[in-house]
Image (tube, rainbow, N blue to C red; front, top):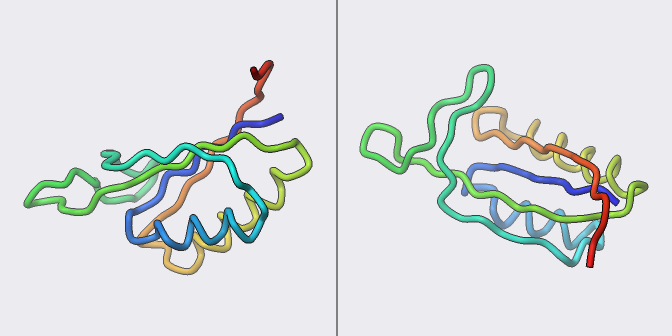
Length: 97
């Protein structure tokens, strides 16, 4: 099993939920009002007058064989509008109860 943490501009919220539904990924945890800045050239997302946009995030746990399909969908969403930005991070899940 792998955990996939997807961080995205709030403008992509409906697209991310649609993507998860289309891939048959039912379980996830949704985080709102995430602040941050992209690694290379992303603008800050702070919810302030100067940087008014905000990010959200979704964390899901999927079987190993689902990761490639999910990352491909995230990459496709990111390429729709590079200025808005979507990032996904994957790590191993050792145990789950």
